[in-house]
Amino acid sequence: MSNAPTKAFASQADLADKTIKFEQLSKHCWAYTAEGDPNSGVIIGDKYIMVSDATATPDMARDLIAKIRTVSDKPIKYVLLTHYHAVRVLGASAYTAEGATEVIASRGTYELIVERGAQDMQSEIERFPRLFRGVEGIPGLTWPTLVVGDGKPGRQGSLTVDLGGVKVEIWHPGSGHTRGDTIAWVEDEQVLFSGDLVEYEAGVYTGDAQLEEWPATLEALRALNAQAIVPGRGEAMKGQADVNKALDYTKRWVETLFRCGKEAAAQGLDLKASMAHTRKSMDPIFGHVFIYEHCLPFDVSRAYDEAKGIKNPRIWTADRDKEMWAALQA
Image (cartoon, rainbow, N blue to C red; front, side, top):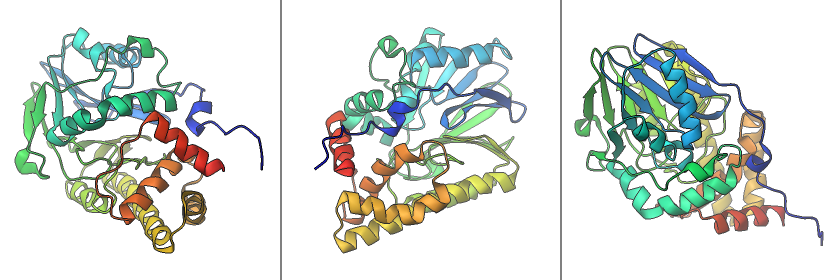
C-alpha cells in the first residue's frame, strides 16, 4: 500500500489569476467573464443597474463594480442570485454597501440556502482558495430580500424589473444545475443571463444537479431564441448559432455524464471504478476544458446517486468532500 499523501483538489492547485473581460453585448447588457471562472452579467438601465451573480467575495465584487463605473454612474439597485452556490453569492455585501436594495432569488434557491447554504459555504471556501482570497471580508450567508415564484418552473411565475429603458424578466425555467436555477431575460435585446444552467468550454459542475431534468430545461432556454448569452462559465456567446453551441455543449456534458452514471450504477461499481468508466466517455470530449478535473469527481458522485434514485442531492460538506476525494485516490 502506498503511503503517498492524498492529492489536493484540482482547484486547490489552481492559483494563477485569470484574465477578466468586461464586454458589451447589446445596448444595455454586459458580460463579466474570466477564462472559466464564474461569470457575472450586468444590465445597465437609464435609472438603475442589475448585477446577475454576485461573485465569491466582496473583494471580487468591488472589481466588477469598478468595471461598471467605467461605463455608468447609475445606482446598482438589484442583485440576482441565479442559484445558491457560494462562489456566486458571497460577494453580495459589496453591492448592498454600494446601495443595492434588492437581492433577488427564486423560491427554490431560498429553500436551498436554508437547507444547505452554511455547509456549501464552508465546502466551497476550502475547494477554491484563489476565488476566496479575502474570505475574511464575507459577513456570512447571502439571503434574498425578494423571492420569486412558488418553486414551480415556468414563465408564469416571473418577475419583471424595469431599470429605465430596459425591462428584465426573471424566472425559474426548470431544474438543472440546482433545483432553484433562475435566469434573467432581456427580451427586447434577446440577451439571456443563464447562470450555471449553461456553460461553454468549461467544466459543468453537477454536484447538486437534477441531471434527468436538465436537458429539458436547456430546451426551454433554446426556445427563447436568444441572440446572446452570458453563461455561468466560459466566454459570452453572440449570435444565435453560438448561443446554441453553448446549449449543445452543456446538454452533451449532462447527457454523457448521466448515461455513464446509470451504467456504473447498473454494474454496481464503486466510486473509483465509476470514475474510470465515466472518463472513457468524458475525457476525449471535455478533458481539455477549464476546471474539468475539479468538476468530474463531484459530477460522477452525483450521477451515480441520481441513477440510484437519490432525487434530492446529498449535501456536500467539507468532510464529505475529503472522503470522496480520498476514495478516488485509494
